[in-house]
Amino acid sequence: MSPHADEGTPPVKCNGRRGNRLTGLCAMTALLCILVVSCGNATPQPPARQADRGFQPGSQTVVQFPGLNQPVSVDADGAGSVYVLDNPGCCELKVRVLKLAKGSADPVELPFGDLSYEARNLSVDPSGNVFVLDARRVLLLKHGASDVIEVNPQWGLSPQANGIAGCCDGQVYVLTPGGVWLVDSDANRHRLPFTGLNGPDVSSAGPNGDLYVVDTNPEPHDASALADYRVVRMGKDAPAIAVAARYGRTGKFLPTAVAATDNAVYVADSIQHQVWEFKAGRDMPVPVPFTGLQTPAALAVDADGDLVVFDSTTKQILKLTK
Image 1 (cartoon, rainbow, N blue to C red):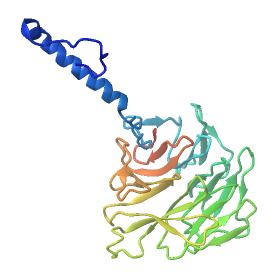
Image 2: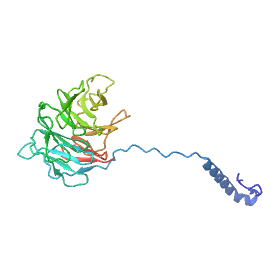
Image 3: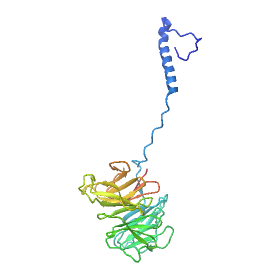
Image 4: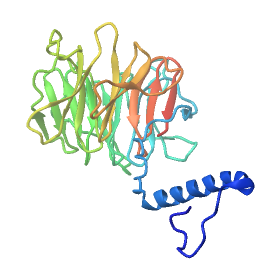
């Protein structure tokens, strides 16, 4: 009998010939009542926690830059535009910097008119200021400007300068064998307290202006390090560096590019033909699901958090969407 039946209502009898037919009905009625009571008293369950936004397999596209000869460096700004340093290296072909605005199919050549074949490093800060390392010069085209300026006129770089990384407000990090410097558009500069680096070669700046540098591990035999390479991070006003990731063994891993967001570091590996994601709170990196990648040589994160990689073997610029 239903526990909620009125007291004046006679019970349904489930015996005799009619009872045989009503037995199933009685059982179903009782079960339904139990379910109604239990569902009414059940504690509401919280919605399932959504997983972190990851890169979607199958979302890979080719960023079309018509007429490229030999891309050597790629970057992106905070508005989603993609930039390419196109350096053919010989034969009187022009060295160019091209910009492809988000949503456009036609790249525009920026007014870097006298780049040499030694130009090899392009970096763009979130505001769209474009820097090019050309031999001993660091050149800057400010966002919206028509003239290129040299940001180190009275200083000069050693021929072994390793790289640049556009920071913020027209400032740029410059890596040299003698240290790491932060230089502004007026050529004011100060040396950052990067100590203990062993041949820094690959660098980029994160969205908040922190500098990320791939370096060899100073303690490769330290069992706790488990790696011959590391990524170090330091803000422009920070007193010291911090280790953002440790990974890879010599001969099995060759870092060629690094990029970063607020909560992840990405490193291109030309030996394993992968881009690795190092996420905060994870013990091990995970491969970013690019397909057909052969020699990743440059990385950038665009305004939407999508990852752009340049493959120097196929000469393709690939984008993977979150």
